[in-house]
Image (cartoon, rainbow, N blue to C red; front, side, top):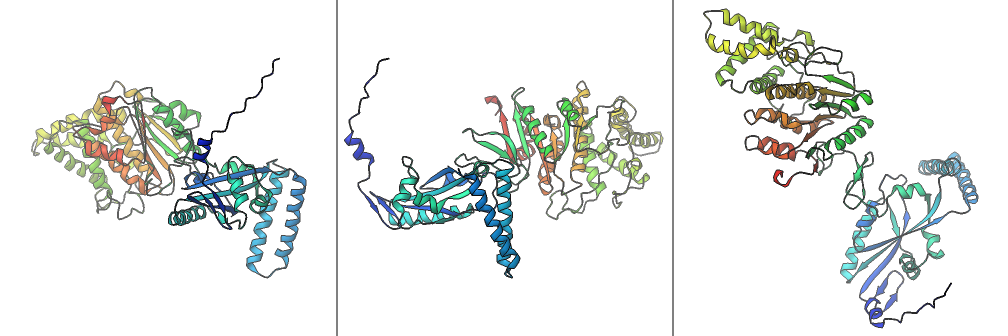
Length: 554
């Protein structure tokens, strides 16, 4: 094998003069490097408990270079014996002192030391010495002073305490530099014993836009940094838990939605899912959820929601709640819903016919001893009218030859017939049969694929109203309502339908509740007739995910 003589590159004096400082002056508390002033500090105090990402802010300290020197503890036996002796000393203090401060301090030290010994001897977690230095720079005296103030506040906000290695600035400067080694004079005063797991938990220098303490791993950002998300955290820039997911078919919408749903469910979040495409049936069954076919028919999994059942008012409604700030009763609010429901079902209904229908509905509820002053809370679901009852009262009125507006009422009767005794009666006629006995409920209307658009929209609105009622019953319980294929609720002739969704998206922030809206085309929400409501749904979503949208659809 031939040997090759190593060539020595000549020193580039011009480059050396360019990058080297004009001179270095070492002082007791700082260093002058050419035009720059520098001060090196070491971290002497650490928080007693740390969360994920406790060192994330290292990358955000301005005009500061941070150096972490990690040295494994080699004599583990000696280290454990030293910790054990410390426990003995602290127990003696705890048992003899009358000073409450010293007693509390000793108690905490004992617990920490016992945890340390258990992690080393039982859990086999490696322990290290960590030397943490921070070098702050400034190009003028004023700039240097201001930078030091910022660094001091930044370090304090991380729960750390910094001290100055007086008369050791030269060695501290060398250790903080990437080309030098550690020095005993610095590590002796700056070393902190901690588990390697605690250091890794800090995610030093990794950084991310979102690292939440109780979050779950969602993915990575454009720089490959982890996103650990807790959607129920509230802050000025994260006012609610609403999520919007939009993208073309096959772009990954359902995968993301299922990932969020599964992780949230594992964290104790309740789910109500409106599923027009039977997208979540398998997932629901795999995790032991409750899958309900709301398309009509018969079977163990078939469920019905009575559109005429009046929902209870949510408890402890705040005065600033826009939707409930008036003195409207439960029945009055339900009549608003029914106006939208019947308009969706039959968009050609006239204002006069709708007024007649509302008047007849009031009479129907009176027959069931329900009026605008009735407390709804204790009325069982079998005591509410159903569509067949509405059809019967209309039939009575049509048979009365002397009744006013008989022809208009006959038209209304014809409209209601299919809901009460016709081909849609299996969907809408009958008492509510869905029992809320599961924390993952999927309402499926896939079998309505061949039905007309107005039938699908009516049932979608009916299910959303049911989910709203369930979600608002408990302010303390985390809950998500998932609206897949949300475009089904968008009718340019009946903007009140998407207004209902808009109102829900605004109100749910006052509860531990969120709305997940999934749609293929974002422009569905921005049509001229529905824009004021669709735009609000998008704006009210703290978290927005857009997948492979065509440029002409944005």
